[in-house]
Length: 253
Ligand SMILES: Nc1ncnc2c1ncn2[C@@H]1O[C@H](COP(=O)(O)OP(=O)(O)OP(=O)(O)O)[C@@H](O)[C@H]1O
Ligand SMILES: [Mg+2]
Image 1 (cartoon, rainbow, N blue to C red):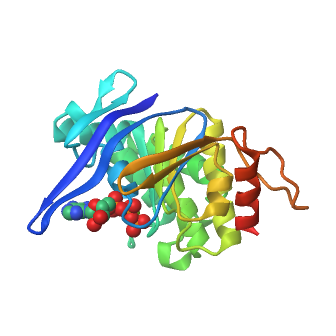
Image 2 (image 1 turned 45 degrees about the vertical axis):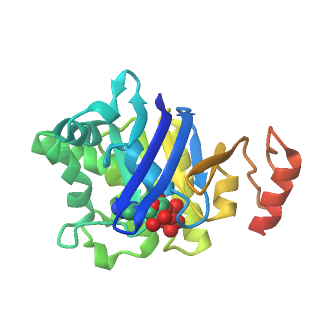
């Protein structure tokens, strides 16, 4: 289980201190997609960077099971990221001179997986996201949604406990975005933790939980899915506040 307690981040700048995150507390449930929402500058990426060990908190703790992420030296945090975390970004960040397959195999190589096994696992992971038929394409010959699915396969190749996605559908139209989200939902069903930063209320409405940040503070936590079926009916309303669920559905129309 990924947990944060008393998490703070203060950036010191020439113009003064920026309190990007203040006293953040949350346990991220495995097997669920948790969406992190909030206006620009509210601390979403800061939170992701601290949870994933890219950065260290000014105060507070991040635990992955019994591993104190906040306390590890950079070398060990890098190792933890390779073994236990997967990342998907808005801009895909694929290596342009590598094929889809080589991109997915890259983190396996870094983690020391032998070449033969690396290729087999990369192929299997591409297949899971429906991209095996494009294994030998370079990224510029793929559509945006296809690139993002390759990026997702790369994030999954090491079988990580947690997948972090920062605006993964931000560059995609809504139907392609829905494909990528569906792939992320599958990732969570396998028992992984998915932390999804998004501005998209419709996307967030399909998550299992929603955290709202404002000015670096955790403003609300909401559980429950508001998935819409094709005929527009709500499949499962919010467990906490049905009025909220309606609002999200209206917002996604
Ligand atoms: N390295 C840094 N140095 C100083 N201030 C920073 C740094 N990184 C972020 N900030 C500030 O911290 C606050 C939170 O930034 P953060 O990137 O976490 O926001 P965000 O919620 O991800 O926004 P967006 O939706 O625009 O991506 C902002 O006010 C930002 O200007
Ligand atoms: Mg951000």
